[in-house]
Length: 419
Image 1 (spheres, rainbow, N blue to C red):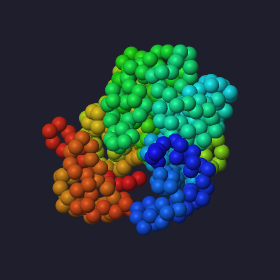
Image 2 (image 1 turned 60 degrees about the horizontal axis):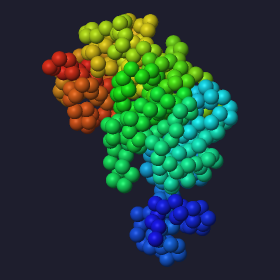
Image 3 (image 1 turned 180 degrees about the vertical axis):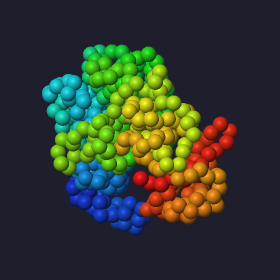
């Protein structure tokens, strides 16, 4: 007997709109409701239908959801969690379409439910979705309206092809994640073959990936942030690498408005498309002109916190060109400047005063300067941010932010005002 993970059960579910509708109206945590469903439909079919309903709810719908078509996708919960959302997938597909041209062939390897395959197909490419999991390959084919193949990535001929790949980072049955690239499936050896043999390569990683993973291989690393959350890194190689040897930070639908001085933004394709800001350059750790460090912050100057994508791409120097900026301590990502740095790459806070690292001292400084505590932000494991935030009674609508960072063997704290 098949279980609900089997593709045959999902094919049966696709032919049973009644089961889909019934499951969508049920709370899968309500045992009595689930029992009633199982009296009407096969137990495995019910399990698949409930999984589908939960996944579609998680996918969201409309402009605020991860997927505009979330209510009609064929998906499961883990597949939704792992997939590139619409806006990120479209951003990547745009580059691949520009390089390959309309109608070109591309393989989406380890395609999952088809988050990227959908965007590639919509961009006018001929997509073949490949996955070792027959259920996921079937889902991607239906969602993207493309060919799908059940195959082990390691069995594919990569010579001269264009590919996008999303190696698995999680054990499907156990649900455990691994961030070690050698634990990915397919693993390092396959990725190195892809980078050497394919003519155009995009490999998706978790954003914590080490840029030095592939040594001297010519790669453009892109770190992508969507709606204020760092979501993925992409290794672009071969024909897809526009700026090999450099890194790129991209903000999609940024939570911070761009300042007039920001020159790295791109216009949305249409009025309801998310804004995109992107910057590329030589990473800080490879620059001779890297920002200086260890300047003593002064009241009236600004502490500037970089967007997560900018920090991971190590592009603080690139984004601060033209400013008299300096890192407060090397490698912590916090920058001091006499003037606010360009948004959305930085969020700037006016320095009010230095403080002892004590809640009572923070509260006294806030009162003295007419500030309402908003948050406590910590760098370098200098303190427990959550503990201090609760103790200070922070309010998200407040205008006072405390910064604490490690400086040698001690910690320093500054009270700042939100700009």
